[in-house]
Image (tube, rainbow, N blue to C red; front, side, top):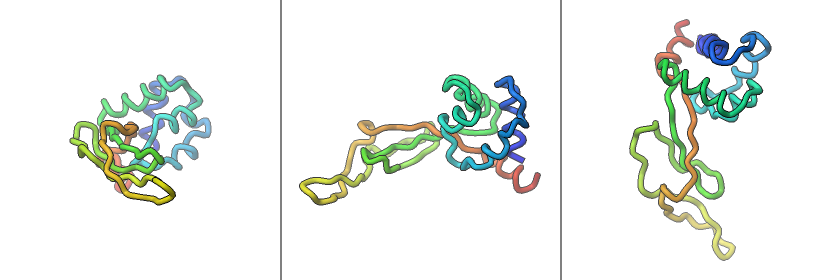
Length: 129
């Protein structure tokens, strides 16, 4: 099960009892979009420690990194695996003179947020485990 594997990985990086109520909180995470802040908050650790946990999961092939590009209103305009090409422009909604208009915005001028997601092998372990 992906959750058990993730708890095991956490216990190797963070010196805590993996059964200390984390299973329920971690089970509420979306396995396709796990943010550093979610892990930091659940584990009650620093951002650096949460980053170390997630990066260890990536190095071990358990997870992979993704990137999302957010419009100024926080809407996610596009997502991709890290390393994939992002489009040069995305469409965002913007209010101008009391009207909401769809505008093209350069991707490199917008906020980029890293997230983590389970690899397909990890997901298969959930189904077949």
